[in-house]
Length: 301
Length: 157
Image 1 (cartoon, rainbow over the protein chains, first blue to last red):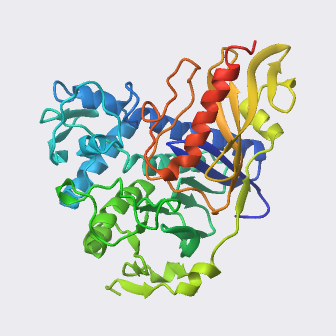
Image 2 (cartoon, one colour):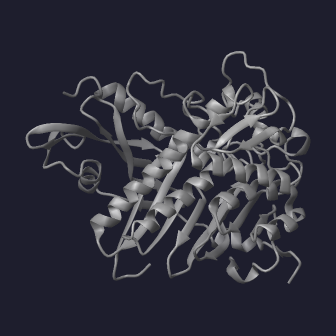
Image 3 (cartoon, rainbow over the protein chains, first blue to last red):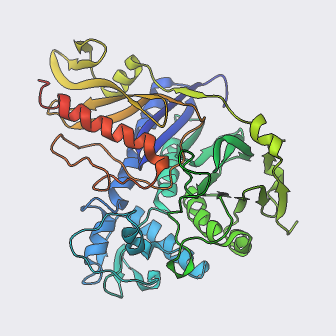
């Protein structure tokens, strides 16, 4: 970032992680105001798309969208539209109706004695005129945990950029990040099995980078403790992929694509091309980089 | 190029790239106070180094509480700004230290404090989700905020 301007770096606990915003601009107080507004936009995405908050758009849809069309905020509508599109393009690998499975795994809370559908049902989500959502089937339940964090990062960056007070910035929500500004930014990529081990770094410029990984608990074992990502047939992942990092124009798309690449690895090449995205796949002893991205990724020697 | 390229990770890189520790200073207490209450004209110390009353024109407009929790291994300094009625106005991280380096990647999401009062069920798996070990650090801040609310929300006037 330019040395002539004032650089500020702040963090807040949001979205279940630490959201960090770094921004630079000529007037410190105005940069801080822009950062405040950016954090507020992240908090607002949280309020709209939380599975847990009974008043969120997501909870209202889950409760009512089979009985009647539910009007949602334009942000929620945009994320749902992208989700349904990703569901179609990935032949069902990206599926926001996975909530009941996550509930059974204990990764999402259950409420009352709710009945739940037990199959892929993103096809049952209807997007109607006037930002209305309707479910064609009963017991459908959505969770936007696989895409909303990326959207929140995009929102934060949009707020920073439109403030006019910021020349360059990075917004990072626990590893899902996006940057804008004249200078490319180098982002370190850690190995999921050992957070102190840097696999390499990727240079990004006015674009986004998102990562996901299996869960490792170094205090217990070097082996994975599983993943919050559900594979085809609603079974846990059975491939050797430890983690993936995806580059895309928007963080929402990068965030969602990490889940698909985590499931299908190099088989996701066509989809990455469709979304003009790239991926780095981390295996226990090697990495794989998608076509035409090798120039921007620098592996540790 | 149309093919994925595979690189073997040399074992030597593992040790060579290991980072010893990491500390990120975001804001000082004074800076965080100003951020939380931009209109405040004075901060009076209620409890030394820990609790301040934010005042504007002689009127209390909120409270600022400094606290510290253990993250994954080391301390995280953070501040909770409360409204005069004891609800969370915002939570800001002041300093983050980890022995691993870098931010902790979290596969889950959620944890929002604004509007929480000491009566809110600020708990894991309820309104704030605990998804995996990687969220430990942010989870500890969640617990810290809960403790701060329980300790101070009803007592500060």
